[in-house]
Length: 106
Image (cartoon, rainbow, N blue to C red; front, side):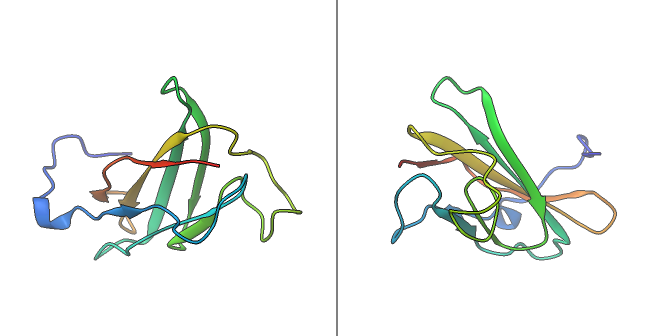
């Protein structure tokens, strides 16, 4: 649960980084770790800003659609320019930081 009454200092925010060396339907999305984060929640929105795919875990990168490689366990495909954002949570589920939205294209 997000504590909506808690303000995040600007310095607590972290910048999401778009992939620079990958393209195609399953690029790896990565971001800088946030201080105090125990887990991350990544959300992808399509061109119409509708939720398209989400992921939660402890790593600071994930392949678009999940899975260890483009050939396995894919649940989503990057077929148009979309936006993504990452939220970081502490061990108690409190929001630690949230990134700006970034775009990613096939």
